[in-house]
Amino acid sequence: MIFETAAEWLDCAQKRVLLFGMSGLGKTRTAAMLREGRWFHYSVDYRIGTRYMGEAIADNFKREAMKVPLLRELLLTDSVRIRSNITFENLAPLSTYLGKPGDPARGGLPFDEYRRRQTQHREAEIAALLDTPHFIQRAHELYGYENFVCDSGGSICEVVNPEKATDPVLSVLARHLLLVWIEGSEDHTADLVRRFDKAPKPMYYRPEFLLESWHGYLEESGKAPDAVNPDDFVRWTYARALAHRQPRYAEMARNWGITVQADAVARVQTPADFHTLIAEALDKRASQAA
Image (cartoon, rainbow, N blue to C red):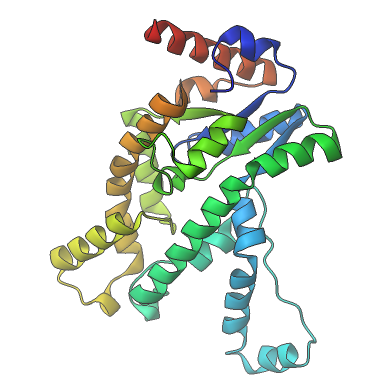
């Protein structure tokens, strides 16, 4: 790790961290708070949705617009422009493109197309994560930022192998940032499941997990692939996905970084609070290793 002790962290003039964990536990809120305190905020999902999948997202919008005669004519004559308006806080264009598999009449995608988009996302996420050192340098040299926070997506644990000491993504990240897991409790997980049930959203799954879940859902529900309610499938899969990710996050923290509790993160209101929280986590790790 680039910071081994609390003293190293507190004394360093250029603090750099990567926040990871389940979506909904405070990564983006914390990064936004730090941004107000003159930290550079690098959002991996924003980078995915702009640099790496922006064209595919816009083309998908255009494909739908071409089905409307008036918009088709305007597009063919370059009379209108259609583009994504993705932001750090609104990643809907990316999740909408990723989609859900199932009945086309309910907005579902054919499973092969869904898997193709999942592969696109995996490749884009790896590329966006590996862009992090470039943005650290860019933020410092171009804009004069001393401190840097990488706001990673919830699926980071799906595109790395935390048990492999030579993992090509984690090796790069650990050389440049302190990796910080925001760990939720069982109550947090239950709350996330309740929230997801009310508003199910597309998400990325590890290929092996996706295939296992898809075939398991088809067998349990008795549905044909093109008759699946897309929202029902992602609801059925969500709690399983969280359980699948939890040990992967834990392994990332054990081998590559530190752990902070989501409740403690929720109490952080200022960069100074954050500095203290990280220092305490480094002290705890050091004492456990002693």
